[in-house]
Structure formats: C-alpha cells, structure tokens
Length: 109
Ligand SMILES: [Zn+2]
Image (cartoon, rainbow, N blue to C red; front, top):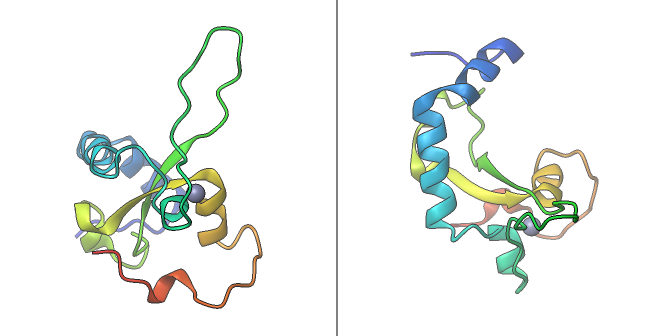
C-alpha cells in the first residue's frame, strides 16, 4: 500500500495518471460544480476562460477522507468531492469559519 504522507509522495500521486483520470470522472459526476455551494443553493462552476478576462473560480477535487490517513481511499470515486477553492480552504481549516454542523458529519452518498 503506497503512503501519501510527505509532500513528495503527495506530489507524485497528484501527478499520476490514475489520479488525473479519476479526478476527471469526479468532476463529471459532480457536474463540474462545488458540492458544498450546491448544498447552499448556489452554483459554482469552473469559469470558462474568455479572452481578456481572468479565470476566477477554480474547482478542486477533494478527498473526503484525506489520503494521508486513508491511502486505501486515494483512488475511490466515492471518496472524492468537487469543491471550489473557498470551500476547499474551509475544509482544510485554512479559513476559520465556525459552523453548527461540521461537514464531517454530513452524508454525501
Ligand atoms: Zn463552494
């Protein structure tokens, strides 16, 4: 079982063909929308690059259970969710936003 604990290991994983293929599958499954925004009734899609304009919204494909702790789920589609940059940051704790119901208790499937 591979490990994804170090930066190098993760970097290698996120560049691997199986991941990039699965990532695309997750985006398509989620309709290229942030699943958290969707829950809030908003639609956040990856912006289409128009000439002369900056591409703003960016979607990430996130591992619900982090691969660092759940390497078995690294390539499991059900462990993936499409998140916008903002919600991804919230999930990773990079933006502190107190909330009543933490996402971790949510059921997605
Ligand atoms: Zn979002």
